[in-house]
Amino acid sequence: MTITSRPLVIGHRGASGYRPEHTREAYELAFALGADAVEPDIVATRDGVLVLRHENEISGTTDVATRPEFADRRTTKTIDSLTLTGWFTEDFTWAELATLRAVERLPAVRQHSATFDGVSPVLRLRDLLPIVDAASERTGRALQLVAEIKHASYFASIGLPLDELFAAEIAGWASRDRLIVEAFEQTVLHEIRDRGVPARYTYLVESSGSPADLVARYGRKALSYAAHLTNAGLGRLARTVDAISVDKKLLLATDAAGRVVGPTDLVARAHAVGLAVYTWTLRAENRFLAKNFRRGSNGRDFGQWRQEFDVILSSGVDGVFADQPDLVLAALDR
Image (cartoon, rainbow, N blue to C red; front, top):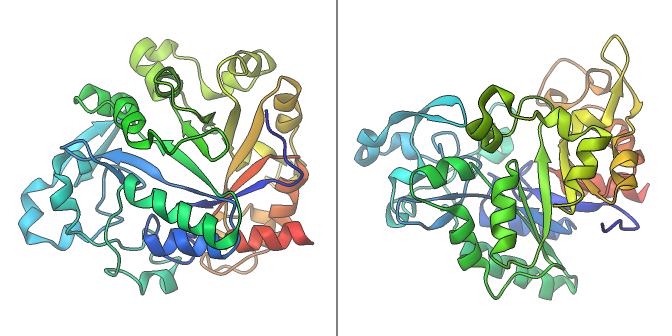
């Protein structure tokens, strides 16, 4: 476990509060604003190229829906028990995806960011590594990458093993000092570790439900995320991963009216068994804040973000994912 003097500040998909996520501009801005690390979500193309998108369904983050040449690629799929209709990275070659341009995923909330729609191309994982290296050299800081492996069981089922593809792509760049690998599925974390990738391994935990890999294996008998966060569950996790990364709801204790009254004891319990703890996602807009930290009725306006951030930071958490990393640093400076 690595517990730092202050939490690691991770630009969530870059500085995604200010620029369309997973673009060069979002990543570079995150580092310019002082982030210690950036987090890409990693999915695959039909020809096995690892690309950076929030999901493999890309109609909400690219201009693919406006491209007549790709109209026939629209389809419906079930991925991790969720049925989705749209366009999927695994139905495109990298050469085809490279022609698309990124758009703001939340245009109603982030209208300023949406003015950058159509400017930036989709990035590959291999495109991000030199961005991290250049920012490290420019700032004189040892900056990090937090790589999230998305839908690994699904991709394996269609012949695209993300563990193998990722291990090959990251070879020669990875080290425990600058790479964190995270996933909602323990299976792929173990597979990447077994391929010898030097990194710190982090298990992502939702506030409800069960992991997709366990559901695929055990069905309704799959161990829930909640069961992983009991004292016994944390003890088991500590034998196989370095950290957990949890929905921020799990760090916010609430009263009967749903008002945040302080931090929960999850961080302390995880630290007791040797696990570091990260949380996601710190965002300033009312839409994303707990009800007693909202200001006014407009979801896109900034609310009392500092108060919510302060509660989360007071939990002793080791790292936070933030859409506006500069605001987290402002809260820490205070």
